[in-house]
Amino acid sequence: AEPLDQQSSLHSPGFADRRAAIDAGFLAAPTRPATHAGSAYAGEGSELRAMIDGFFEPPDGPGPIDERGAPLRLGRADDGASEIRAIIAPHIDFHRGGPAYTWAYRELAERSRADLFVIFGTCHSGMEHPFALTRKDYASPVGDATDDRDLVEALAARARQDCFGSELAHRMEHSIEFQAVFLRYLYASRRKVTIVPVLASFAHEAMLSGQRPDDDPRVPRFLEAMAETIAASGRRVALIAGADLAHMGPRFGDPEPISPVELEQIQREDGEMLETVAAGDPAAFFESVARDGDRRRICGFSPIYAMLRILGGAAGEVKRYGQWPDPNGVVTFASVVLE
Image 1 (cartoon, helix red, strand yellow):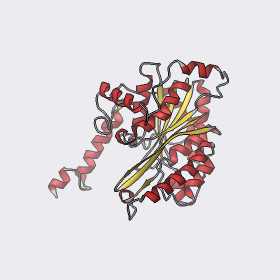
Image 2 (cartoon, rainbow, N blue to C red):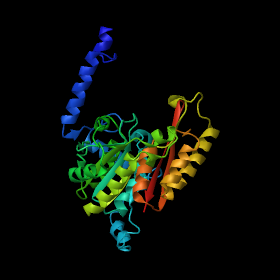
Image 3 (tube, rainbow, N blue to C red):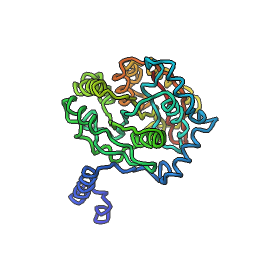
Image 4 (tube, one colour):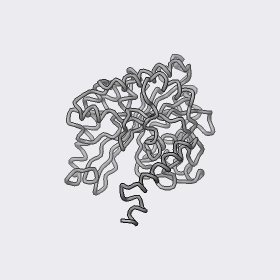
């Protein structure tokens, strides 16, 4: 028992002390560390930039960002009708799905003038609260993504709930970290940008209790506060959902491996779900996942719903769909842009 306790494998006073020390250190730090650097992606700046450069290369990637074309495309629509308002990008490990990110981020670089990005990320471990904000910058090997503390504070005041009670969930969660890495890659040499990182966990909870997300008053209060805070800021803002789709196979609790026929079925069902996303319809999106009890385990359920709810209507397009199958499980993902 003693060696197990020393390795934090037992629920004991020693474990509680070590956990409290780790939690206190995280909360006191001004920056959220790049937890997955050196494992899920390259840990050194030049190596990481070269890695992401390669993701843009065809045929898996969309090609390099067209720096000259972006101002012309935006200049034809002064009312902003053709400008990107939001994207959905994967949060799968870069070595499994890196090129899929670039189909969304290339569009963002070419067709958005935003200098503030609200990033909704899945909290894979669940949270006591539906949303978790942080005031911390997100570190990365290509520089820190700066937290927009003024907007975070204004949002927390408007939301009328505890927006930091689950802040510890940010410490190890990768769904926002991977988006912060891509934003730093895109904008470090272009312009100064800030982020508002928001972890979300409410849609599955609503579904499993036979309710809809807005039945929990904290959810509409937060999302409406976000829309109001963005409008009041006068800033150019784009939304990002770091969201994967289906998770199926023995690794995720299914009794048997996924067959090629089942992969095709998953793709069809994902496609039907993504039609509701492209239509900008949060209620239809929720229903498309909930009608079969989320058989496919859509882990981007909460971030996608939150983003669609804030947009209040948008025209979307699926730029890329992908599957990462292995003998024990399949993960699916997509890049989507919304105007």
